Length: 142
Image (cartoon, rainbow, N blue to C red):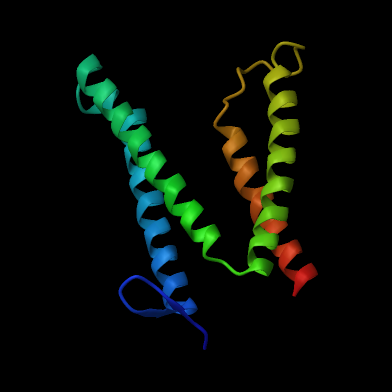
């Protein structure tokens, strides 16, 4: 197995991948928990107190930043083929999300639906399209 010289010692690619995956999972979980706190805390925990709500939003933004940085590190430490697979999946997911989000946002305005479209639905489309694109790209490049 190949090793990479780090500042302290040699770390295998597999160990680096495990460390990066764990870090990404921790920060993604922290961001999701802080997002749930922002979504449900004002109503169920602190009766819409503005100071607490703004603090929860600030924490959510910080957790989001840490998640983005963990994702960046994860991608930087992948080999070229894995980076290419993720790049293709991200490009596909971005395109699908933009097209879906634009049309979905207009459904009420053009009176095709009675409800107000929820922007968080775009996140589900993004996740599903990314997962499908990862599977397709992995099969294509492997």
